[in-house]
Length: 100
Image 1 (cartoon, rainbow, N blue to C red):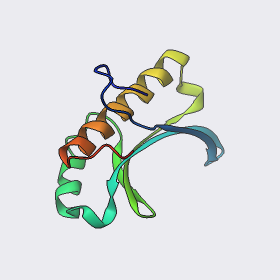
Image 2: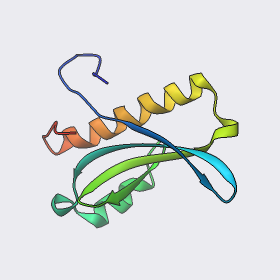
Image 3: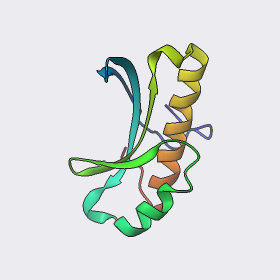
């Protein structure tokens, strides 16, 4: 999605899967390279995030939010997509980039 100002962009991935016999949705958005991060700082930031959590996937760090599909509404999914994307973009902009 594009940010409101239209000057930044952020990719957000939505996928569904099954875990513990429950259909789940996962929303994720990368915000930096793992090699460039201070992991102690990231773990401390994890406690204050309004939604989701910080994770590493391959060479990137990302925000990830998971929810059971049965509890998700269309409006709720759209809201989570926006929130995850906005949060990842904020964290990415702290590092001065706009790659993801």
